[in-house]
Structures are given as structure tokens and as C-alpha cells.
Amino acid sequence: MPRPFSLSNPLTISAVLFPNFELLDVYGPLEMFGVLKDRVSITIIAEFSGEIASSCGPRGVADLKIADAPAADILLVPGGIGTRIEVENTSFLNALRIQAEKAGIVASVCTGSALLAKAGFLDGKRATSNKIAIDWVMAQGPRVHWVREARWVEDENLFTSSGVSAGMDMSLGIIEVLFGLDVSLEIARFAEYTWHRDKSVDPFANLQAPDLAN
Image 1 (spheres, one colour):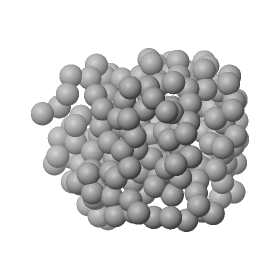
Image 2 (cartoon, helix red, strand yellow; image 1 turned 120 degrees about the horizontal axis):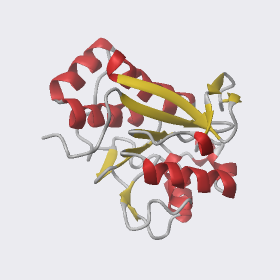
Image 3 (tube, rainbow, N blue to C red; image 1 turned 30 degrees about the vertical axis):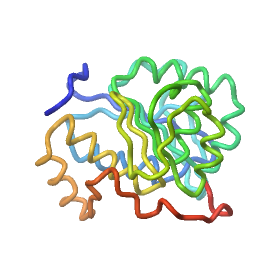
Image 4 (cartoon, rainbow, N blue to C red; image 1 turned 180 degrees about the vertical axis):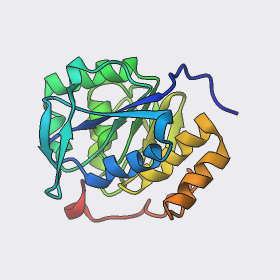
């Protein structure tokens, strides 16, 4: 049964960028939501508007400054090696927390949960992250109830996912909550994507490769 989130029509989605963000963390979930066409409106936000380089090189373009962005139905926070710098960026974290507090749903991918944790938004909540970097992420939020083994974790209006591709699984889970299972299954078929529907099963929970951590 859909949960009683107060959302608009079309559904407004704000995706956060920062230098050295992870490409798939952003554009994988946005592809899933974007299939909904006129049922969603997507905006890219960042500390400063304009072009921002990803960790892989290609650039994204932020439409608005995060401090100027209106409240979103869904706030999407990606990870990436750039999180190592942004966890020390107080002005960015303050703006991120304000946006998270205004959003209907907050969703993070990979080490994006480290940013939300360092901003204080995850205190007292259940959350997960990329298992490659889980120890570092956990250190950013000692008052968070971290789940070491999960594809994604739901805690009321908070959704946090494991590494990179898990963001697409989580996004389909959010779509199921908001629009129903049939819609999520149809989007997965359209994208020719094998959806890992069981959020409690994380095949990468024991992954150890700290040199690749993002």
C-alpha cells in the first residue's frame, strides 16, 4: 500500500551534484524515474550552478544552487570519491540538510549517505551504504543505526542504498511505493534491467576493495 507521503503532481525530483560525483549514482536512478515522463519533473542542483565534473570525467550541469532550490518531493543524493571532500564542506552540508528536511522523500546512493550522516540528518535512523566504504561512512555518523547488509534500507521517508547500481534497485522500490508494483516492473522491463527486488539481500555485503571505494 502506498505510504502517506505528501507529494505533488508532477513528482518533483532534485538530484544533487558535487565535484567527483559517481555517474551511475545519479543517472541510473534518474533513468528509472524519467521513464515516468510527464509524471515527474527533474532538476539538478549543486552548491554552485553550472558544469560539474564527475569522478569518471563527463560533466553534469546543475540548474540551480542547492541553497536556492525549492523543496522537492524526492531529494536524490549520490556518492562518489568527491564525498571525501564534501564531508568537510560545512556550507554545502548545511544547505543539504535544509533541503533534506524539506523533502518528501530523501534517497541516497552509495556514499551519499555519508553526506547526509555528516550533515546530521541521519541521526537515530536506519541507513546503509556501499560496503566497500562502509567503515568510513559509519565514521561520519556515529549516531546512525547502520545496516551492514542490505541492498537498500527504508526508514519512513528515508531510503538509502548500497553501492552504485543499487541506486536503481532502490529507485524502483520507491516507484513501487508511490505508483505500485506493476509500474516498477514495467519500467524495469523497458530498461532491460534485472531488478533486485529484495532489499534485504546484498550480494556485495562482504566486498573488500578499499582502493576502489567511492
